[in-house]
Image (cartoon, rainbow, N blue to C red):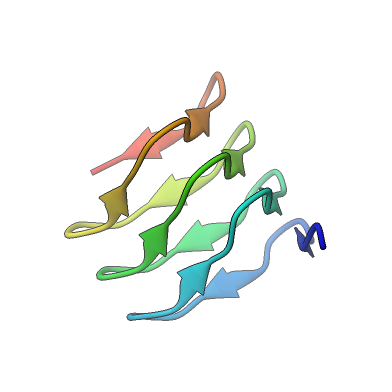
Length: 66
């Protein structure tokens, strides 16, 4: 299953973004979130401190990784 997370969605601390998930433009991924294999973080996404990035995560142009 592919999970699509819409634009400007807030993903809270400790939330896991599953394999193949697409995180849309303007999404905020909070501190402590886990972004797992093959997740795609689109343009303009803000990714907070202590976020874990594992294999094959793609972070597109314009993403802010703190």
